[in-house]
Every structure is written in structure tokens, then in C-alpha cells.
Image (cartoon, rainbow, N blue to C red; front, side, top):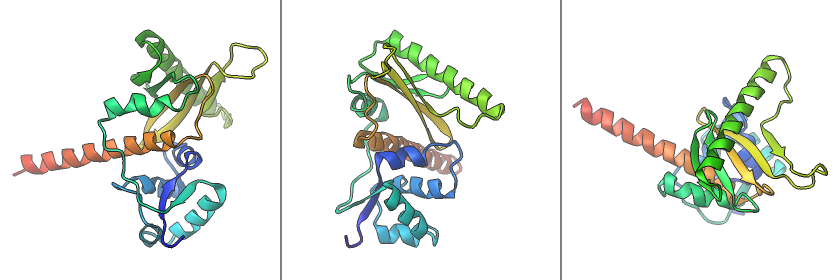
Length: 211
């Protein structure tokens, strides 16, 4: 495909946002979400000589899609956008998004009490992971599923952690988690876009106040 547009796949979005402090390759992949639209391959490769090797591996691993046309970054108000974005990630359309501190940022399908309880559970799991990592257990993971049936065929609730700009977010999903879904890419891209918009407005406010 001649000079395609690049964007992360769902697997690539999870991989590149797995850590609070991403390595250079993951930071490069995250930069695909830093603009107001998907970047052209040639423009992105021109940003750094390391990008060529990063892209080659990302295409091999299925972390990046080459698209025939540009896609705009989500521009909707994040508060209104979140329920729509997370609903498609659950087979039962019951989902919530929590901060790593346990605050509920958005919910759909759960009532307020259910969502707050599950968000608190996610925060407790964050604390658990940190304690195990301090003890030297590197396999404590960043996702967990809970099952009602002892056969463990279908999870009742799943939690998955990702990081954007040093802030942790927990996806809380009822039923089967549907993470191989473009809605996940749109969610993480939307959080990036909201952060960029806030940063731009804060900078403009500071410049105005300094006059």
C-alpha cells in the first residue's frame, strides 16, 4: 500500500500502553495517537530513524494497521463518549472505566453502587500487584478474571489495566471481554486526545495570563 496511514490495532494499543513508563519502542507506538488524525507512514518514519525498525516489528506482531485513508482522532466530550466506547468491549454491554485510584470515570450496564464497588476492587488489585512486584514477583500481571462457575469456562467479570501519560486506567468488563475490538483503540485514542486538548487549553490560558 503506497504511503498508507498508520494506527495501532487493539493488541498494539494494549501492548504499547502496558506500563506506566513505556520503553522507547512503546513510546514510539503511542505517538501514533498523538495527532489529530492518523499519520502517514512516510511522515511518521521521518520523525525518528528508530521508527523504521519499530514499524517493521509492529507490523510483524500485528500491533499496527496500515490504512488506506486517514481517520480523525475522537473529538467528543469524554464524559459523554466513555459509556459508548466501553460498552462494545463487553459481551453483555456491562462495563466501567476506573482510575488506578479506584474512582469511577464512566459506566454502562452497571448501576452506580455496582460500578463503585468494582472500581474499588480494581484499586485493591493495583495495590496487590505493586506489593508482589516489590517482593520480586514479575508475573503478577495487569489483568484478572473472576468466575462464577468452577469450570472457569466464561468469566463473570474481568479487569484490565492500561496507562496513558503516566495515569493508570482499569477496564471492568462483564461477561466475555471483547478486547480485540476497534472500540478499545478509540477509547485509548480518545483519552490521549482529551489530554492533549487539556494541555493546549492550559498552555493558552497561561500565555494569556502572562500578558
